[in-house]
Length: 263
Image (tube, rainbow, N blue to C red):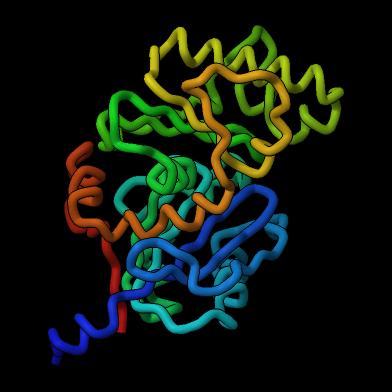
């Protein structure tokens, strides 16, 4: 039986997992999203099937302190706790994989799953006007918020920015390694200008592991964000107003729940 007094004395802690194309990171957050211990990290395994990823996440999080619930950020399109696209991992085996359910079953706690850029955005945004988050990592992630509310997910990463390249290919980590810092930064600037012409945002935030490598002058409404937001934003998945907005932007599929709990 739930004891309300006990719950009040011990606010829930959240295991927050940030799945990236290069690394897997996790930490435990207090009820306001502060890490209660230093995050743990391992390289993302390749090849990476759903089974391999789940096993890697179970091993990664085993040393962490106790928690009451799980938040997961995944680099792809996510709906109703399931993976729709997994561009970094490839393979039809990912299509419709119930990652939230699988981790809830293995770890014994309720789990919620969202696109990784959206999770990061929840840890960054101010909740005023039109805010855009771009994550610069293995590829490019994107999230759009209107007065703090998530809009329908837009996968800019796979949209062409030139005749030969998508956003992913244009400013992803492979391009950064192949180009000089100056040329890669010029590409980042072109992406920023292109996104502004599409959305006319009020504020744009650059996150992800490569955001720290941006060295070009930026407008006052463009901000470099901490990559830790990919973890700390996880607490917001358990804000019921936020989660209701996630569910409200699409009708949940029949028989599927956005929260999974297996005992």
